[in-house]
Amino acid sequence: MIFVGAECSSPALGSAISAFHKMLTLIQIIVPILLIIGSAIHLIRLVHDPEDKKRKKRLLNSLIAAVLVFFIPMFVDAVMGMVGDNYTVSACWNSATNPGSSTSYVDPYDQGKKSGFIINPSDYEKGKKKTYDGGSSQEQLGNMTYNVYVPDNATDGLPMLVWLHGDGSSGTSSTAKTLGKTAEKAGYPAIIVAPFSPNMGSSRNPGWYEGKHLGEVKSIADTVCAKYNCNRNNINIGGHSRGAIGAWMMGSTYGSYFHSVAPVSCCKSSGFKPQNYKGLKVWAMRGSGAGSGSSNDDIYGSCMQSSVNAVKPYAKAVHYTILPGTSHGGAGGNAVSNTEMMKFIFSN
Image 1 (cartoon, rainbow, N blue to C red):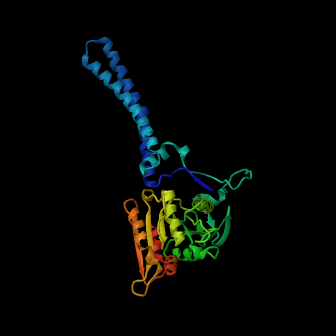
Image 2 (cartoon, rainbow, N blue to C red):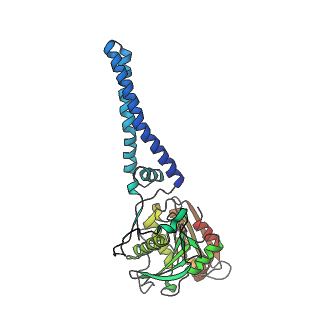
Image 3 (tube, rainbow, N blue to C red):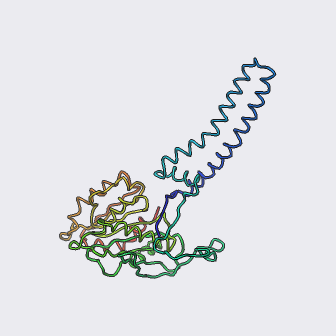
């Protein structure tokens, strides 16, 4: 599935704007009619008394007011349309005023013809959420394999975390289940997606952040989220080592598609756009040799601090953790079992 169109990210604001727009539409229709009726009355009286200057002024004011009341809502719609969906208020306004532009889903991988209803109405009988089978599964999209973990008794609207592995995990078993169990312990049952890069590694570049891999990861996220009807306002990306670079660059590339970004033990790459982190949450983590010998994660100290500093002016919240006495691999292990990080990632 491919996600098409922007959403109003604040349901409460969207409802308020929708109600205000309906009220404005009624005013746009009713008030000009009343003003035109008043103008007609003034005109009739002027016929009987053409020298009544006050009546002439009232007639002119009524006509001007009728025109303004009729055209002001149209002007506001035009301005919001020009602003587009770059801001929450304009996105909610455009969603309320143009229902045809709301989110839709297109499946480019299923070319077969369908008949009848795509969704089984019985799944949503009396507003009941659809329930999905829990467990782990391995799936394929294009050249990329990915593991999916779904909690037991999963229902519509769960958050989702996409986790990108480092060089050492290329082609090996996924950490999706471990991350899923950690999320459940943290009180946030979530769908976990762990793709495998087909050509990861320093000797088999490109990594996640190069070539077409970022787009492939985004397509996988779209597909899994659509399949399990995840909470599209709570899609998150994280990763360890080279996967951390991929996580930084996914946030830079796709911005508000994500709710949070969790890079562990590595930094941003070239072409990074920190302004696209506006409204995102960031939990960055690395190991340190302080207290128990050296750690190769210390070499990322400067660039990770630089990455964190770059997004601070834009991000909704930033948390930077340094783990004393923890190696590069140890930091990755800490991340997948860190309940506090999970709470930070999934919470609002």
